[in-house]
Each structure stands twice: as C-alpha cells, then as structure tokens.
Image (cartoon, rainbow, N blue to C red):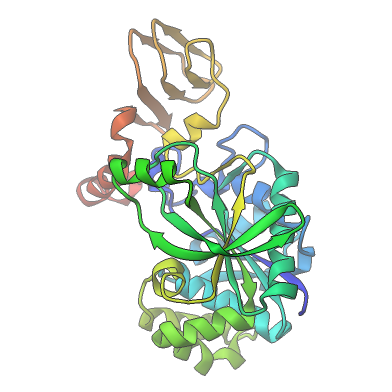
Length: 365
C-alpha cells in the first residue's frame, strides 16, 4: 500500500449556525470554539499528524478557494479542489480519489469533514492510525468508517449497527463488520439503539484506499464514476477547472453513505471515543463549550444575565446585552442580524434561513 492522504471536506454552508455562519464565510472558516483557530485550521492540524502536508487535500466550494488559501497558506494551490456546484459527498470524494490515484495508485485516503469537534486529539490520531493499519494490512478492500460510542439517544445522527460475529483485534482496538446503517431515527428508536449496545453514531470520517472507493463508486454510482473517469487525464492540469464544471453539471447530488456505504458488502466500523461532535447545530456547540454556574454558554465580553439558565448567548464584544428571566434559549447576533430562539426548535433554523433567502434575498444569508 502507498502513502497516506487526508481529504478535508470544507464546502458546506452551515446554515443551522445562522447568523454566525453565512454563505460568504461559513462555520468551517470561523473560530466558533474560541481557540484562536478556525474549525478548518484545527482539522488540518489534527490530520497533519497523520499525513504529510503535501498529501492533505481540501475540497471546497470554488467561492471559498481564497478563504482556504488565506487560512492554510501551507497547502499547495493544486491541493485545493474547487467544486463549482454543491453535489453532496459522493462527487466530492470521487474527485479527491481520482486526484490521489493519479499521484499514488496505492494511496490510502482519510476523509473528514472540516467542522467537527475533537476533544482528545491524541486518541483521534491513534484511532485513525489503527484504521489505516487495518486497510493496509488486514483488509485491503475494506471501507472503514469511525463509529462514535453514543452518550445519549441522539436523533440528529445516523447510526451504524456492528456485527459482533466478524471482528478483528488490532492492539487494544477492535474493528467490526457493519451490519446495518440507519439514518436519523426517531427518539424511541434511538433509545432502543443505545440500550442495545450494538449501535454507534456515524461520524462521517472514513478510511480506505483510493482504488477501493473508486471501484465501489464505479459499481454503485456509475453515472458519477464515468464522468470523472472520462476526464481524469485533465485533473491536475490547466484544463481541470473547465472539465470539473462540465462534470458537476451532469452528476447527481448524493451522499457517499447512501450511494455506496449502505450497499457495499466490505464495510467495517472502528468504535471511537475521542470526545467527538459534528458541531452541526447550536445545541452541539452548547454541549462542547464551557458553561457558567447557571449552565449558560456566553460568547461576548459585555453580556449580563439574570435568572437565566441553560442558554447560549453569542454576541459581538462591543454589544452590551442583558438577558433576564429566560431559560433554554439561543441569542445570537452577527453583522446586524439577530436570532432569538428556543433551543428545542434549533433544527428548524435551516428552514428559516431558506425562507429568509426567498423573502429577503441573499444579503441576509
């Protein structure tokens, strides 16, 4: 097997984090954790402990090409793969796999979103190294996903059922064959999953060889594979931009989970526990942020709270904000836009943003 490559998917809008996350500067380019680095920069730092810098690719919307260059100047420009249209993860991963296979036909791919929270970076690195070893030495045709040990019956994540009858011991870790994938369940089903001990959260972090994933895409998503294969000689040349636009105008928008992982037979899961969250919502950020004595998360230097509990308040430092007698709310202000919402309704924020776009125009999203 060849060298290890890391692919960071950084093209999303992050509309559920509105108004902080906006189309012109979405959440992966923001320091929403208050660390001094954006989520993209933190993801790069983690993966640079496993893959050489020249082997790290960023797949992003072409609108964000300059933002990636600004935040990761150490990335060679040719390693920033610009998508002209949003087509979900299957075309994105096909694009990266084709790019890698041209550089190293035996290359191993780690695929990770740019906007995850990882509490224990050392454990994250050790887990991924185990997955890489499994693909290199145990099952070279395996598609591996990291499964997160669930801490609650979460309805916002997909679930993976492991097959305890087929497992591989790698040091202290065990890799299992996947029995089933289940998309976001209702709360009662989620409770059953968690209580059974057979289910893990689907992290959306994958490890496989470029050749193996391309083989699976060719079998299950030929309409995507054929478009890239027909034009692969132009990837990595000055004709790449034009041909990628032509490809993306033709291929369907589909996730790698639905298009490949749920159909492929040789899929495995490595249980992981490194303090993970996908940071998809205000609630997930709330869970992973320090809280005051009233269980409030406060972002902003001039926030005063009175009889307020279990709330998330995020405002610019130059705004004096007083919150009195409220519970379980989100108050978020950015660029003159203000969100006040019950935390239980946060899943509706994406739909609200779409309504704002239709009624008020792009300036507000």
